[in-house]
Length: 427
Image 1 (cartoon, rainbow, N blue to C red):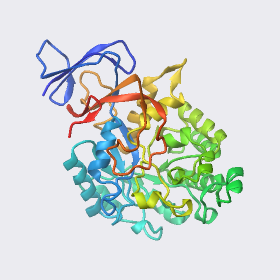
Image 2 (cartoon, rainbow, N blue to C red):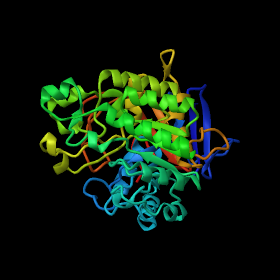
Image 3 (cartoon, rainbow, N blue to C red):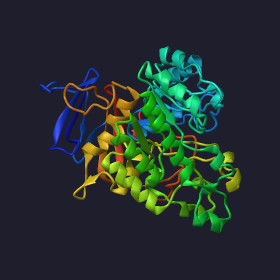
């Protein structure tokens, strides 16, 4: 079907019409479209790309499935998500990553790109089938034991050496496990007052420092998952200045929430890495604007009710975030210039760069004539009050419940087909 979007602003530029036909954005030469969408007041962005999503399938379909997670992603303006490997069974073989990839294709709401495990069973003892996953139908290019750190430096070096052959990426969950044993939240004054074991910033910073040195030595690509401290920002800054091939991500929740939230003992605020200090939040926002932090990634981590609605110490860490990510980022003001949203920078941090890191060549293209019709339409003037019950995700562990956030996803298109129209999923 052909769509004509009238009077829409592409990346904040002067309004124009966009004509979608045959899966691409074409020049409109007076053809009669099948559907017309009034784009007045809307901004067109390349479809958002998430490098860090937990879809839980196979194994924990009670928390999320590829289909429900894909629907949540589309409603959040995403056209591609990278699915983490900590499923059951673990995505450490070609068979499992191909299963996740096929489930994504069947859902047809976003492109689901599996991330393979670095080590067998995420156990950190021996390398998984990296080459077989890379050569599979899923064409895996990013590998991560997220949820677990690849703590053995010799194993980490071998992984970096292995993926260099096909320009792959090792995405590290930076956490020195011997410094976080029993940790419940950020180590600091609040943890002391609450009587909860602290998770020190240095546990993250030490692993990042080690790994950038290994990546520099090997000449391979390293990606830092959910960077959360001011010290980590400085480690990455210095590594980039030396030319190390390192990229880093920050989550929306680490840009807005601080460790004071733990004072409620509400397990919805328990996450790994933990919420940090206001100074850390300030440093993360500045680093995102500057580009030391390359991208925003949701770390969408759905959990079943029994895993979250329990005592803090027994709750599993994680928050959902796909449907609210863009609004949360806009609320921080991090991606503004002269007090106005810099839509080009939004596109860079949330679409182009993550697509480039993941090698998703069909994504991250500005919605202009000749480009794939894979984009999202945003109403920047709208506001929304977050209701965790009204969600496409199977899980309700949303830390923004009741918050008023700017921006609303009006439509999402994947290769010319709408997955979201008027703020509602099309299937």
